[in-house]
Image 1: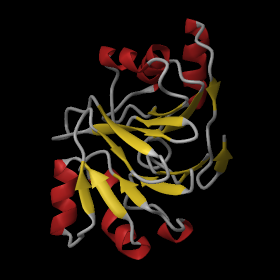
Image 2: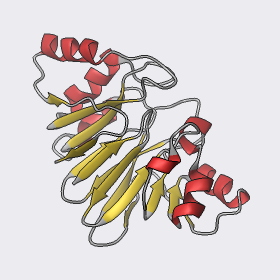
Image 3: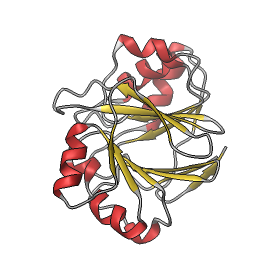
Amino acid sequence: MKIVWYGHACFLIETNGVRILIDPYPDVDDDKIGEIDYILVTHEHSDHYGKTPLLARLRKAKVIGPKTVYLMAISDGLTDVQTIEEDQEIELKNGVKVKAVYAEHPSSQYPLSYIIFGERSVWHTGDTYYTPSFKQLRGMVDILLVPISGRSTANEREAADIIEAVRPKIVIPMHYGVYGYGSVEKLQTELRRRRVWTLIKPLKVGEVFYV
């Protein structure tokens, strides 16, 4: 599995030959994003929907998101668009599946997060705070992509709450460094204090991580 962080909450996940882009924000460098098959959008806010119309057209990618995202994409002239609802699981191709999971993001009309099942399981939380329902995901997540900025989403302490509940093998911090600040060191300190042991793998923008 190949994971690339393009900054903020934007990632490329490539697994079983399927290339999935998540949350392409307005300032993402689209020239550095190669071929993609799908664009997953967690919710309608511009820092997550951003360059979805442009990249969908340029890369001939299918857009998948909640109803709010579907309506925005249709109004932007896209035609290869699919809705997904909380707890729904859809199969893409080559055996890769995506499950939509609840996200605690009160300022969004219909926020979602996504678990991608391929060679590994990857949970992109979208914008979320901690909620006890996340405990149900323990044992399901190999790699967690979690926000740490605290800007309308989890800060380092709340990210530690999510990690402690889910116990992933690997954690990649996100949602910091572009529109807000966050400290990977503060997250690591909080996890050590709680004696929660997992690999924290901060990525540089554009860095490729194979797992």
